[in-house]
Structure formats: C-alpha cells, structure tokens
Image 1 (cartoon, rainbow, N blue to C red):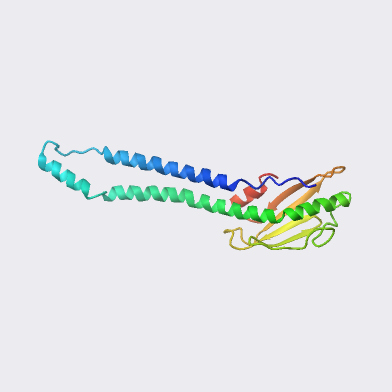
Image 2: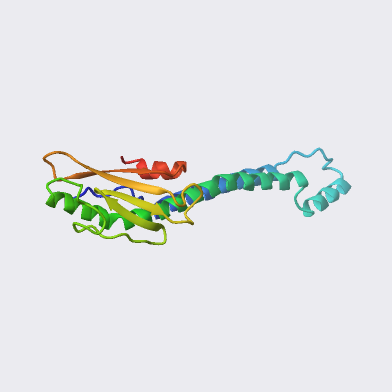
Length: 200
C-alpha cells in the first residue's frame, strides 16, 4: 500500500493559534497606547483653576490628530500582517481539499503497482483499477499516466495558484511493495510550493 499522506495540517489549530497571536499583539499595543495617553506629560499650571478647567475640556474633546494617526498606523501594521497570512491559510485549506481528492488515485496506483509486481506503466486513468478523471470545487481534473498523478487546480484558489498543476509521482524500491510519493507543483506561489513540497 502507499504511504499515508502527512501533508494535510490541522488547519483549524493553525487558524486558532494565528488569531490568538494577533489578538494578543493588538491587546499589547492598545495597552501601551492607553498607558501613554494616561501618562502624557503636561506643561500646564495645575495650580491654576482656569487651566484645570481648560485641560478637562480638552480631554473631553477626544483624541488629537496625532493620537488618531497612531491608532490608524497600528491598525495598518496589524492588517499588513494578518491579511497575507490569512490568504495563505485559505489557500492551504483549498490545497488540502485538492490533495484529499487525489487520495483514491494514490490508493489505486499502489494496488496497481503491487498487482503488477512493482511495474507502474500499466497504471493509467480508467485502467488497472485506477479511477477515471474527476472534478471537485478545487480540482478541474485528475489524470494518471504510468502511475503519475496530475491534478489541475480550478480557479478561485489564489493568485499564481489558479490553473496550475500538482504532480504526485510514485517511486518504488526494488523488492519492496511500499511506494514513496514525491509532490511538485507548477505554481510559483511561495506558500503553495512550501506546503506541497515540504515532506518530499
């Protein structure tokens, strides 16, 4: 039988850890901002009742322009970190679904190789027990030739990922019945390549 696929991560746990990190970072930044606002140095004469009234009126007016700009800058920094990371996690989730769609083909190729004595040249789509092509939301088609599985990704996954291929190639050691799978992709998206090829 083929080796189990260990590429699919626990995405829910990764999402949870990532957003806990972002929330804690935001809390720390807001805490520091509030501490700074509460302890801002003032050069007003606090012994003068008129100055005290003016300062109280100023506080009640809300944040100054500089303070609002600081808040906007903090939000921008957090967004610049969170949005790309969230996009990568979304792409990984869709790639996990695409790899799941190939599981039946990997199993069929492993059985085909065993029955043929380690020969993969007869393991093609629709032959020797290998399923014909299929499509899902993330996958346009799956083709098998000589045991090599080629997945064509559908659109809507991500930039530089849509329409690219995932190629899952088996190798078998002489005298062994265990297949080793090597995954490559034509995508140039860095997170996609790292995710698909990390266990090769």
